[in-house]
Every structure is written in C-alpha cells, then in structure tokens.
Length: 370
Image (cartoon, rainbow, N blue to C red; front, side, top):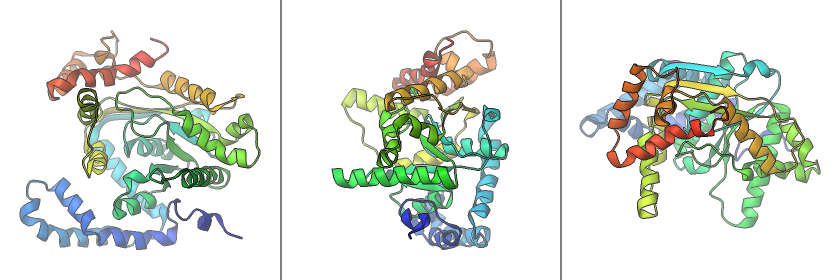
C-alpha cells in the first residue's frame, strides 16, 4: 500500500528527514546567495559580492546547520516573523478565532494581497492562539528557481501545478491536488489557499468559483454529494487587510500598462522581488479576520464563492487609508493618518495615483455596512 507521503511526494511539503538536505542545497545555491546580496547589499554588491558570498554561506551553515525537523524550521520562521512584525508594522491584530476549535482542521480561504505575507500573518494569528499552523498552497509559477521551491516546501508549502499543458494532464493535476487537500484535512493539517489565482491588484477581493470546483473533484470521485462534501471541508473565509500595501505602486503599474498598452510584461525575477518587497516593506496596521465555517446547504460552486466573498467583505478591517481613499468620513481618521497617506500617495508616480486610490477605496465600497 502506498502511504500518503509517497503518493503526494511531487507536491507535498517536505518531511523532517528532507529538511537538512534541502537546507544544504539552498546554502550551496549561488543563485540564492546572489539574490540575498543584491537585495541586502545592492549598492556595494558589484564590488564586494565575491567576498560576501563565502561569508554568507558560512553564516547560513552556522544558523541552519543543526535544523533537522519541520518544528525546528517553524521556530526559525517564527523568529523572522517577530522581527518582521516589529520592524514593518505599527500593529498586528486578529479576530474570530474564538469561534473556531483548535483541535479541528480547517480549509482557510483568504483574500490575496501579498504572495508570502497573507499566509504568514494567518499562521502567526493561529500560532498565537495555540492552533496548528497551516499547509500553504503556492503556485508552481513562483517556484522557477530550485532554491525558492526548497525554501517554500521546508515551510509547509505544497505545490499547485499551474504550468501543466494539455487537458488530460491538467485534469490529472487538479484531481491530485483535490485529493491532497482532502487527505490533509482529514488526517493531519489545516490548509491555506487564496480565493483566486494571483493577487487582487485593484483591491477588489473576489473568489473564483473554479477554486471551489477544484476542491470538489475529489468529492465527485468519491460520489459524495456537493453540499455534504463542502461541509466536510470545513471552509473558513479569512480577510487579511493591510493599512499600506508595500507593492501598491507595482500593482498599479501593471494595471496602468494593461489599460494603456493592452499588456504588461513581467520581468524575470518580478515575483521574487514582490515577495521580498512584501516582507521588508512598511505595512502599517495589519489585521486578520477569521470567519465562520461554511455549514449551510450549498448547491454549487457559485453559491460557495458568494458566501466566502460575503464573509470577507463583512469581516474586512477597514483602515484610515481605506476611508481616506474612498473619501468617507470616519472617526478612525486622524490628521496624522491623513498626512501619512498623503505622503505615501505623493511618493507614487502621478499617473498611477488614481489607480492606487481605487485600490485602497474598493474594500470600503464592498463593505456591507457602508
């Protein structure tokens, strides 16, 4: 009998015995070290990169050489999260976990604003309340570099194969993914997945029914009725909101180019740069709002998607930046907030400012109370 680890070895996160070999591959990757040097020492990398590379390799061997399990890796990630929250946010908060059971597994479906930070903040909230951390769905389009794939899979990420070609291969990959998600929920772990492929660049959060249809591929194979299978998945909508989006100008540039020129050409390392910018950039107040499990009689994927959207819109924490952009009066807005947002907007290219304003205003438009 094939065990679940072997069955899903092509997409699942790494096991304990795979952590140290993966770390050694990362540490010995010249591409990884070059990326660190170019981001952290950009002004001097051309001149002393050859000196920094062996020093960095030695540093990572010292820091990571004794890590031999997922739990130990999670502790390292936790230390980085503490530093990141202290240095790039003014406040981190969460709500709704009092309605969930830490002994159960959930399929968390969240809005998607940041490649790495959305699931990281969800995990930090769960960890803070003694819930198990989640396994994270990540598209293979982000894993073009072997060291990136290793880093992600060491941190409980599993692969969504988006680059497969051909109908038969696509259906096979969807069935495999659907099976993995259900198996994980039934046996070992909660799951985090974004409500759509790609980030919501305009600030308008919308669930793709195709995601829900993918979940049900396994249910259909098992001949379980759609409403019953949805209940088994224990779906919980999650709204992640950032007072400031570190990638707002880059998202606006993409939208602007598509509107003006009909297309946007992504640079080779743009996804990696977005990940780094999201981690290191200033975010202001970040809030994660957990909804309630979907346990009604949902008849199709559209109905499920609508309920996920409704909970995300209802629970989304609106920041002063959202109210200012939407030109809505709110007691939450102070003169300090107005000045901070004005300075942020002025730092953005003039032709992109209207797009950025709309990005921050859309959550206000979607909120049912307003």
